[in-house]
Amino acid sequence: MTDSPWQGDACSLVEEYRAGRRHPKEEMQATLNAVKASGLNSESFIDTDGALERAAAADISLPFGGVPLGIKELDPVKGWPDTEASMPFADRIATKTSIHVNRITERGGTVAFGLTTASEFGGVNVTRTVLNGATRNPWNTSRTPGGSSGGSAAGVAGGLYTLATAGDGGGSIRIPAGFTGLVGLKATYGRIPRGPGAEFSNLTVTVGCVSRSVRDTARWFDVCNGHDAHDPLSLPRVDGWEAGLGTVNVKGLRVAIVSDWGGAVVSPAMWNVLLETADFLVANAGLKRVDNLDTSLPRMGAAWSISGMIEIAHALKDHWPACADQLTPEMRLGLEYTAGKYNAEARSRIEERRAALNTRMAQIFQDVDLIITATNPDIAFNAEGPLPSEFGGIKAGAGNNGQLTFPCNLYGNPGISVPGGFVDGLPVGLQIIGPHFSEPILLELAHRLERERPWPLVATGSPL
Image 1 (cartoon, rainbow, N blue to C red):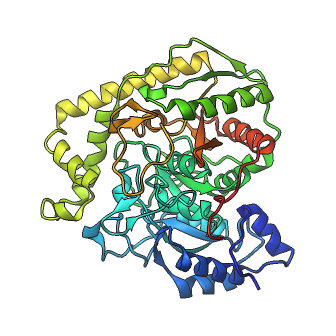
Image 2: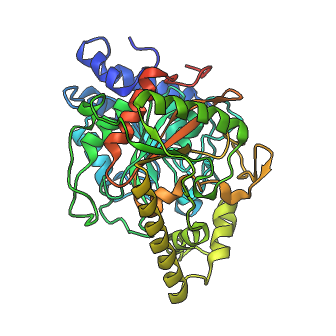
C-alpha cells in the first residue's frame, strides 16, 4: 500500500510502476490524501472520482503512464471549472480541452486529478487571488511560490505530485521554478501548440511544465511538442531531447554572465550565490566566458503590460467596471491604468519597441551563444504580496519583478531556470538563456549542473 506520494521525479515513478513496486491507483489515492491534508493551498479543484477511475486504467507503457498530473487552472479541461482564477468567472465550465493537456494525458499517459492555483489571468508574479486566496511556498509557507504557475510549483516542490502544467507569458514558468527549487523551461515560442481557440494576444505565451528533474522536463517536451493546425504559429515536431541528455556538445560555447539582464536590480546576496554556481558551470562544461559585453536591452515593460491587458479587458468586457472589487489589486489597477491607452499610435510604438528588442537580442546572440543570469531579483517574498519594490536593500520598483524573464517572451527565445543554491533557507534560480531553438543546449547545461550538484527534489521540511 502506498501511504504517501512519490518523492522522486516522474520518470522514476514510471519505473516503479513498471517494476510492480507501486500502482497508479494507489499513487493517485496517496496524492489526493496529501493534497487534502496540505496547507499550501496549491489546488483550486479536485476531480476525485474521475482521477481514481482514470488511474485504475492507466497505461504504464506510455512515457508518463499513471503519473498524477496537476493542471494549471488557466489551462482548459472540458467539464472542469474555467475560471481564469478570477471571481467573475467562478461558475464558468470549460467546453474544450487544450492541445497541451490532451497530449500530456493521451500521448504521455499522465492522470489529471485537478487544477492548480494561478494568479488572476496569469498576470501577476504572486499566486494570491480573491477567488482562491494565497498559495504558499513549501520551503517557507509565509512566502509565495511566485506566479502565475504558483500552485503547480508549490504542489510539485511540496511533494504532493511530481508534475504539473505551467505557462509562461512573462516568466510564469521560470519565476515559480526559481522560487521553489524546480526545473522550469520556457521554450521557443510555438514549441507546444496553444488552443484550440487560443488568441495570440501579444505573442509571448508558451506552455510547458514545472518538474523536479531535467529529464522530466525533457521527456515532457518530447511528448508535447509539434505543430497543430489549430495554432498556425506552432513549430514542427522535434525528437530526442531526453535521449540526448549527456551527449550534447557544449564545449567552447561563448557565454556572458549578466547580473542586470533586462535592466533588473538583483539582490547582491543572491547574486553572490548564483555567480559561484555560474562560474562552476562554465568551468565544468568548458564554456568560454565573454566579459565586458554590452547586454543592455530596450525597455519594454510598459508596452508589454499595455498590450497584455487588452486581452483581459476584452474577457471582462461584460463585467467591468462592476467587477472591480472582485479583482486582485494588480488586475484592477492594470485595467484602470491601461484604459484608453491602446490605440493606433500605441500599437505602432509597441511594435517599434518589439522590433528594436528583436534587433538588440539578435546582436547579442551574434557575440555570445548563451546568457547566464538570475531567474528572480531576490528570494521569494510574502505570500500575500505586495510585489516588492526593494531587493537586497536596493530600491528597484515593483516593475523589477519579471524584468529578468520577459525579454525571452518578447523575443520568443528559450530560457530555463534551474536550482542555483540557497539564500536564507530559500532556493534561488539560475537562468540560462539561448537563441531560438537552443533548448537541447539549455537542457544539457541544466543536466550537467543537476548531475554535479544535485538539488533536493522536494522542499526540505515539507510535510511529506
